[in-house]
Length: 414
Image (cartoon, rainbow, N blue to C red; front, side, top):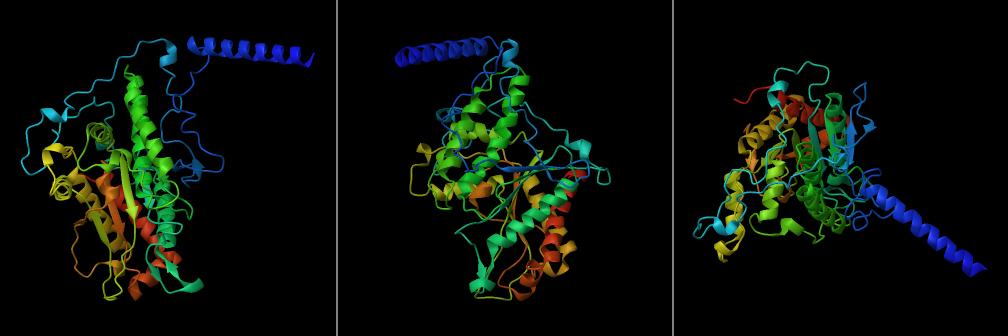
């Protein structure tokens, strides 16, 4: 009798499963997401960025997704035929030789333009209730966990870079949410992650939105979805330490074809900005002080990659990527320095240089958003440290970040 009951149970379960699959196939139920089990998050293990959207009072406490639908098959389920997303000019072998330098991808995009934000609509809107509505800011507080960053002092009274920059990022989050921006925090706790997790997490935001735009424009979303699966691999592998080795697409010299598609997609999202926060430290010269903002222009990225290629056959390596908003990056760096100097005059750098400086940083080199690394001051300098360890000082730094991003969008480029 038990055996007969067991057989009956199995038959019923198979019948139910078959019925559900049929309903899914005909669009009555949503289809299962490809790769969902492969990238299933373990209980208690967080891999998604924390996203904050402003509530009706502008206090930024309402969690939400990143402005895109989480049902990628909603249009497909309607029965409308979707076209294959075209990819053009993405064969590295067709490029002219670069001699001892890496070849260079053309600036023309390899994929269709499906997202073109109207940035002109923001100009002059500084005093409107939510002037940054529709803008997404990714805030990356460096370090975390065992990776403390710079440390001043010792024992229980030690001041750690990882703690200060996280608090600054949270202050910036509040101020930006008050302006109506959607804010994505790459970390909100004292956890250690690899920088490759950070750039993969940032990339996933544009890929998700581009996939939705593809479907809305009658294209299949397979290409952005497959890139999202690769980003998921990188995120999972790089969960537990800053030295994790899962570079994935980001592990080559130059820009291979798949990475070029990712960068071409990110380039369409001028309404997304990436800000990294870190501190400076010079134990040999405690007089060094003040704010710095680092960025990477297109020419500088090429120069860095060509340096990495020295001693190798440059024609056998992936080409350099050239479609980078160098002007936008330099402008944002200058605005961040100027805004912070206005909010906290004592953080004005001794060199009095208003422009940002170019520096090779993986979190800037491996993303194609407008991106800057802001260094508010030196932890090794008494004056800077006094400001950064005070609640008022960190609030001022966070507000300065928000003000700079506001000015970036509401004022015309010179």
